[in-house]
Image 1 (tube, rainbow, N blue to C red):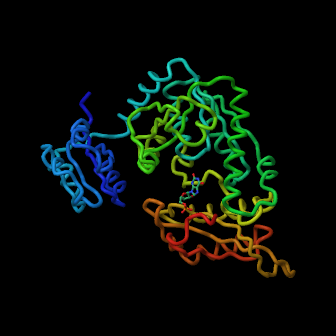
Image 2: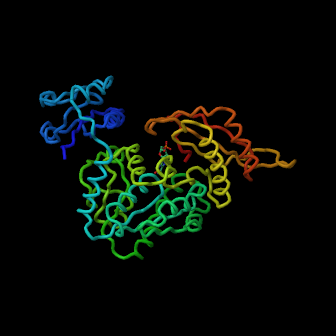
Image 3: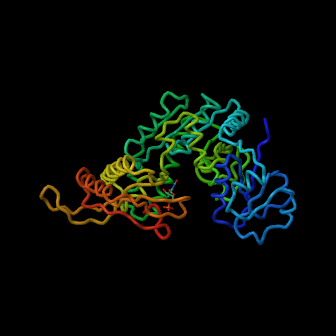
Length: 405
Ligand code: XMP
């Protein structure tokens, strides 16, 4: 096998490091992002075929320019820099990644079992499919349904993995979560309770399975870059892990997607045979629809929000092409007067949000054609009980975050 070529993105505080690294990968060339503080010796050891500087390059060690590989700080014509100056072969794709990770997982895990928290999102689903390929029969998956999933979602997740050898367990924890959240209105408090309850439920379920050494999670490359971490080893020891595995006391964590950008994760998922509705699904926050329901959470409010959200999803997916990166409903806690069936109502307002974004750090509202917005409003007010009117959120991020809570 030919040695993999790598373009190094050496970052001095740039906002576009991920965009640059992704652009290089889109040319079929592997790229990695490292901090500008990396020593010249370490850069040399990485053996890049070229270096792209991002951010304030004044701070760049002059030794970087004397390594004998092409270096640029211009991002105007990366194609010719990478393909011509660096003489890249352009033969990197997710096939090679898949082969490599399958071998690494087999080597690291041996005959042991691996536990995966399956959320049904793209990353954890692709992670499950990759594990099935590598170590069939050695996987346990737990899906905690907190009751804040979208219409039909728990069923779709169970169906996608039906018949697969993953010992899939789905836990209906809706009433537990709602009980813990009764009377709570503060957004941060709500998030904290949901996170805590999630761990409690997961812990109870994983205990029932006995001792499992490995915990797998679908961490992807941007998560690693943002946390300042280093990508390279498949298995992490517990001290540099945050969140669920640490709280559950797992010593060994495997992150087989940690070298991939989101679009590559989707490609890998398709290659592994996951259905389109899982592979191309929009991002969905861990606490689910709970961060889209302002004020106290109740079963009735969740059902109203889920029904309205389903209409938005149907109309946008049928009529808006290309689809916005994210689109959903928010159930506000502002009531307004309306008339339904000749009767005065005083029910909450639903807000529709749809955004255009490159990286979710900034976003603008998506200009959905007015006739489609009108159809969405007509359908929601006619088909969903407990909604008086529908408004469209046209706020950019910043200042408005994507989610309302
Ligand atoms: P904000 O609201 O911060 O959202 O502008 C940016 C992106 O992050 C998603 N998001 C979350 N994802 N857990 C997640 O996994 C969360 O708690 C969470 N909160 C926001 C949001 O949907 C958007 O894509």
